[in-house]
Amino acid sequence: MPVKILADSTCDLSPELIEKYHIQILPLHVILGDQEYRDGVDITPAELYAWSDAHQQTPKTSTPSVDEIMDALQPFADGDPSQEVVMFSISSQMSGCNNIMRMAVRNLKLEDRVFVIDSANLSTGIGLSVIEAAIKASEGCSAAEIVEHVESLLPKVRASFVVDTLTYLHRGGRCSGLTALLGGAFRIHPEIVVEDGAMHPSRKYRGKYDQIILKYAKDLEKDLLNARPDRVFITHSPADPKTVQAVREYLESLHYFNEILETRAGSVIASHCGPGTLGVLFISK
Image (cartoon, rainbow, N blue to C red; front, side):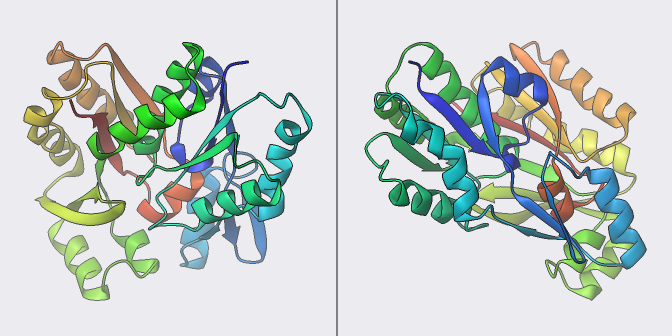
């Protein structure tokens, strides 16, 4: 049997890609007040933003419980003893999900055939690695071969995004009140990059968001033309359709990528970055 690929919901892959590559998704949780929801199952980013604006609070997020992960893995424990599984988590520097996955694997004594990968990334920075694993699985590779292949790519995944508003970062304690105020006053839109499993501010853009998003994409051109040409993601939370289309047209103008994939950020990622965030994500050569 092909190796089964599992990933937590922060990989932000679309339903179409999940179905195409036969990926099983493990939802993280979003907490709005005293209500808890499963990411991608019973909460949408639009509902999340409406609640956040009404309550002037940032939603909280949490990992699945050990029992939830064990329930997802139980069919593999009970089924074909030759079935192997590769699981992906959001960066262990951003969440405890990776540790929860490993604990569930140990509890079920599946260490010999269920392998957990720390993506060292978020959103479709994870999704890029998940798709690579799924392709290798469809080619008949073993779990060990898939893990070796993916781990060789992890340092080459390039994930960055630009936020439209600092409000959500501010509410979540990710920037000072003064920074949030200045951002609103001077239209500062920071680029956030993922490096070594953590988020760091990079460039700061100033001006109208639709214009700076296209500038952000064009600033990536050198890196884009040094990327693996298989695919590139435009992932947003959501952004204005015209802005997304402008970025897509720019990427198409490079005549470089075999696939330009658009996905929406799920509720967990959206709860931290806020509406209007857009990123261009790819794997470098």
